[in-house]
Length: 158
Image (cartoon, rainbow, N blue to C red; front, top):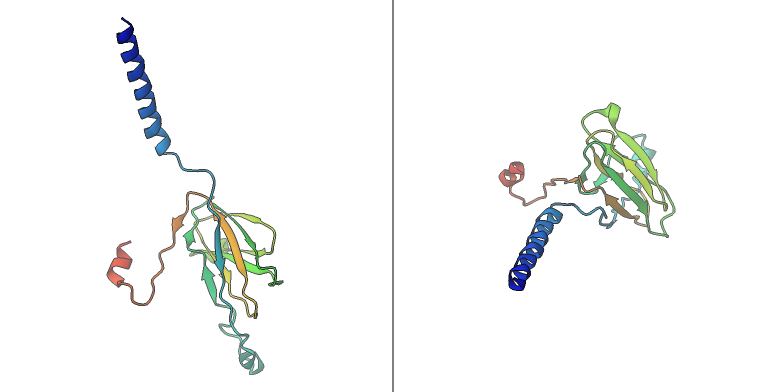
């Protein structure tokens, strides 16, 4: 009789552990990973502005590698203490009316995407390179980026 109860208790514990393993395995972690990225800088094209040209000067941006679905969040700050300017983070998409722009400094800023968007940092014309630290919610997707030498066919199959 005791052997039977011991066997039943063991099977019950095993089943509970097995069910727990499979149900807990599907849950996403709530804690987001913090990502650090050193941004590139450009030389200020004073020769263009002195000649009266302004087209394209402020068009360079750097992606953060993610696509934010609607209602996804990004928390971001600039961490290089030698860089004293503010950065501009833009949430870009295919509708200029819903695109958003935010100033980023040394304090954490939490931003929620009102529509599916891709976050970009506007490239600065400074000697000191800014460094950003950011976290995104778990429902984001990786931004596919094509680089020289990549296979075009495989890229478009993603």
